[in-house]
Amino acid sequence: MRRIAIALPISGFGEHEIARRDAFIRGLLPDGVEADLLTSPASPRFLDAAKHFAEAVDAAVEFYMGIDTGVYGVVLAAGAIDPGLDRARAVCLLPVVGPGEASMFLAHIAGQPLSVVTVDEHAVNATHEFLARVPAKPPIASVRSMDLPVSRLLQDLDAGRRRLSEVCTAAVRQDGAQALYLGSMTLGTLGVEAALQASLGVPVFNPFPIAIAAALQLAGSQPGSL
Image (cartoon, rainbow, N blue to C red; front, side, top):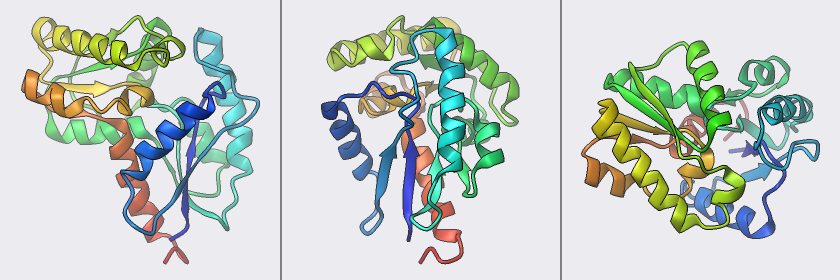
């Protein structure tokens, strides 16, 4: 099977964070399958302002055009809310998995009112735009912000986990959410969904394993992949 390309929307991750994510992703892959974390040097360091989302999409489009189809069988798109997914698919010669699209489809099948929990106010706005265009989704109970941009969250992951738990609890108890979606790929690497499910009694959809599972299925179905 050819490798999976995992696009990163930002260029600000240091070596330690790249290694942490790489180890997390390896834990989701079966034996014999490998994935590479890739990013465009033109990408913004972090998505800390509204303009950075557009910059990230523009950089990603050029990146997708250059994906080596001889090395990779499928691309896992950057971001839990699929920024620029349609543009990526228009230029990429490989199947492109949108983590948000795949996760919302599963949540749609489950059918419970869902709250999306994401990192900051800019991501909240982008989440509403994503939900407006995604074709299949469950009833949306709310979109909540942790008020913690990724650049700050990475400085103290344990504090991020505590804040995520607080916001998810509020979504269930105050908004009537019967399911939760971790609306940032960084949140998906924190390893908290099992604890949240146990404490809150609702399913927690993590974009990373959902998108990896979809990418594996697509990669295995491509001609010449085996």
